Amino acid sequence: MGKHTLKKGDKVVMHTCAEAEKYNGKIWTCSTDEYTVGEGRLKQRLIFLEGFSGAFAVQYLQLVRLETE
Image (cartoon, rainbow, N blue to C red; front, side):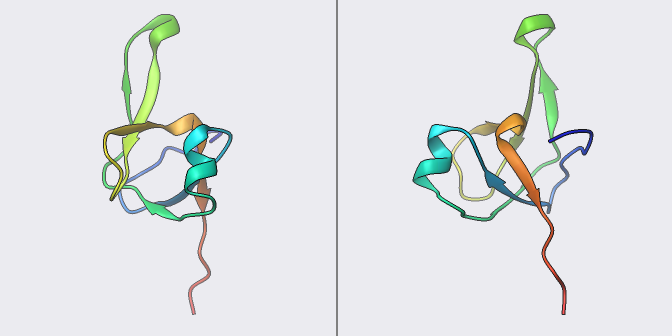
């Protein structure tokens, strides 16, 4: 994700993970702001997605910018 911190309401797609193949191109809405758990090698950035069970690793999400009309 680079330096962008995901926020509630952001639109994202999954990439480079098993779930990305299953949900191929599906646009998800973040239901929380991203947060960090763990320390050192166990440190992870996570977020909850609307309609997805459990937290998801931010490293496998790409922010989607939708054109507004």
